[in-house]
Amino acid sequence: MNPEFQRCLKNQKIKKFTPGKKLAAKEIQVAISDFEQAKISYINNKNYKWSTIQSYYSIFHSARALLYINNYREKSHYCLIVAIRALYIEKGLFPVHLIDGLRKAKTLRENADYYDEWSDIGAETILKLAEEFLEKTKQILSIQL
Image 1 (cartoon, rainbow, N blue to C red):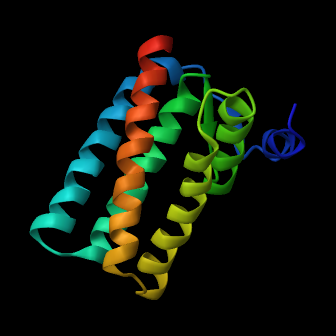
Image 2: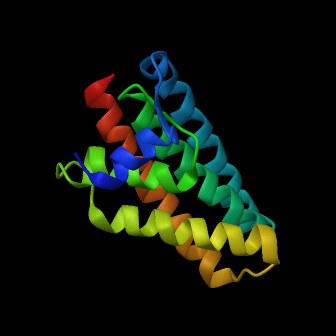
């Protein structure tokens, strides 16, 4: 098992979560809603800061759904990334560029949220990533649900 994933489990930043499978579909619905709102913020309102934040949370909830389907729950955004890498990337079930994108999206969201630093290019990049992450997650969930 991946040592970082083991550390997240040991530190209880990733925990077993028995109702996870039952809640995975709800999480993907939240991800879809966040993505739709991110598009509206980006296209209609030109609110790039808010679109960046909403796009990140679409990705976050998609990733959480992937964790839930395995009966795990995160207590850390960092450990969520570690878990997706261990449970999906290392098994060849998820494209590597999407986990790299999740890390980048986390940074863009933090910059927008905490430092009021954002751009239209960053918002566009993360919006496209959110769409791809969501579609790949839905493919995986349709097989596992």
